[in-house]
Structure formats: C-alpha cells, structure tokens
Image (cartoon, rainbow, N blue to C red; front, top):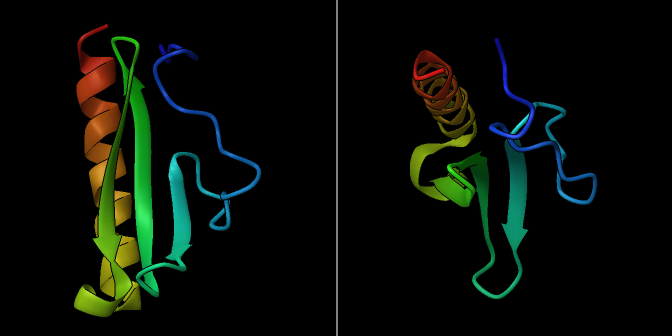
Length: 79
C-alpha cells in the first residue's frame, strides 16, 4: 500500500503538469525549462530534472514519467 508520507504531494505553485511529483519549471536566471521529478524518501527531499532544451519536450516529459514510476516502484517495494 502507498505511504502518504513517502511520495511528495503536488506543489500547487509549481504543479503545472497535474501529475503527482512532476512539475514543469522555468528557470529565469538560466532561461531554461525542465521537468522536475520530486519525492521524499526516509525523510529527505530528492529531485531529478530533465532539460527540455537538451532532450526535447516529449522526451523530457516521458523520461520524467518513467523515472517517477521507477522511484515509486522502488519505494513501495520496500514497504
């Protein structure tokens, strides 16, 4: 079963994708857009980003989705 404390709840300010734990972010300083996967494990916040400029819009989103799925499977497998 899912542990509500394990997976990050969507940040209402940044949750532009509508997908739990995945946000599309625009970094004004570097003028870069990326998908950010976020989760919490053992009380620590973790993130991984996928750059739109480097990988393309669809690839970056798909990789973020796949990575998020992998993280969820790893976390829940341990429960």
